Image (cartoon, rainbow, N blue to C red; front, side, top):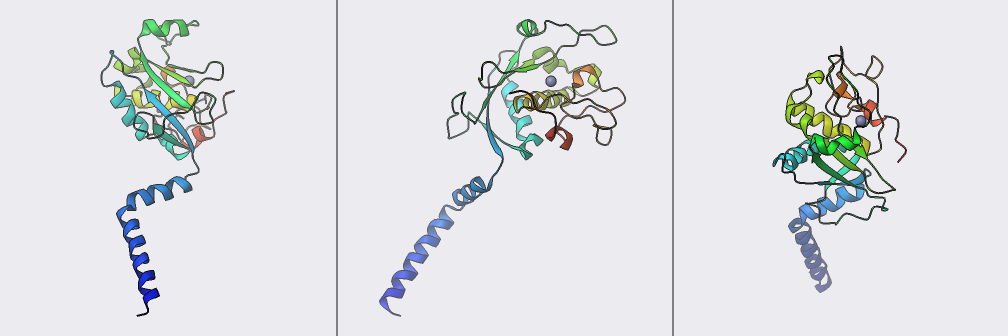
Amino acid sequence: MPYNNIIVLLIFCIILFLIIKNFSNVLKFLTDITDTRKKVYYKLHDSNLDPNFTKITRGIIKNSKWAKLYNLVDAVNSATSPTSPTSPTPLVNIYLKSELEMKPYHDNKQYHSDGSQIKFSITYKKDGADPVILINYGNWKNGVKQSKLSVMDYRTYVINHELGHALGMDHLTCEESTAINGVCPVMYQSTRGCNKFKCGINPSVNDYNAPKLNW
Ligand SMILES: [Zn+2]
């Protein structure tokens, strides 16, 4: 075999060895460059109210169907540090707050038909800053009976709903035209109760096409 061919074969073998050795990195690189989803960072803040808040919420977000449209990256585990508020890559801050802490955001009280107050969680965005999600601890702890969801399903709903706002989605109604197989969109306010429908806990195609908020 000519000398040149041996060199070429050697280089080929070295390259092949490096590719196999770094197979997972190569795969990650290929998935990254072919991923057309918008990257969104989220940061979970610890809470004394429930020490498991971040762990549970991380699990919900990992299984969230918003992942079909968005690449949701945990800011804590991300190698790339989150960017500034004006960056096209937003950082969604998620907190668990007591009902007392939520009070300033609940000026207009609304009531269920049984007379009990509707207690919402909220998402806001101020002066072009990144979105902030405040989860109402009372609902987080006990669920909301009007939704007819288990506590864990209510938590899944409320995280996906508020995350939807942070991603720019506005509310949807729940009626024949928006429910799919009798299940309300996650961008419907299920804390109000879902009447004859079942409350949804994960986004559906109707949520992907929900009207956009002005932010
Ligand atoms: Zn909402």
